[in-house]
Length: 230
Image (cartoon, rainbow, N blue to C red; front, side, top):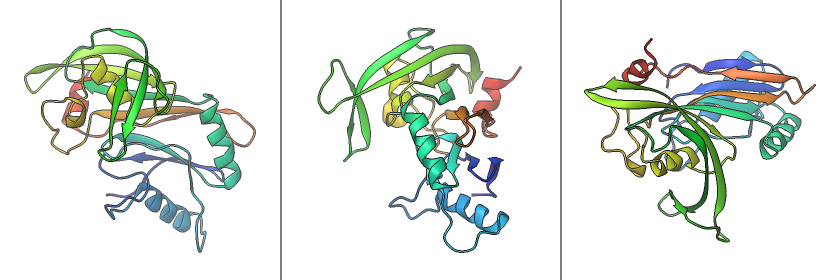
């Protein structure tokens, strides 16, 4: 990937923009991860020799783009993780759907089960011991034209942090993400991404507790340009 896109940095936090296709943390692919690149930034820019601590407090799926927040100290990591668990963090996403959802806005509750072997998540109708509750707020912003078809821009706010939660939510609403072949999209996007972008986080700063609002612009791709054109 190109040079790290740093959105915010202080002695406690580091917020960066993750390109689609880059893993948040190291995986079996052996590809360089966002965490590794961010550690190198801290080592170089902050003159931190040796092993750099950079705590992971949340993640984005590999084909998803957007804002990722790291903790630069163990205390910051502990406090941020607690804030995520207690739902004191507001997470905002933009999504491009293949069609109009069957509801224009609302709050969707689902019980989700992940198949670790296939890395696919499915929604089940009722609570089960192995299922996790996922809650997602959604609102249609507008329809737009892309490559000769009508598509839909949707704002999403996950109130929980389940694996593939937003991807499954839109598929359940009858509007799979552009490019998301795993959850019902008809065709891939040119860069193999899915059209889901983590646009912002509002978090309590781990030192002092002040509200910190962080933003990340969508990537420079034709489908995002079409969706956000005035």
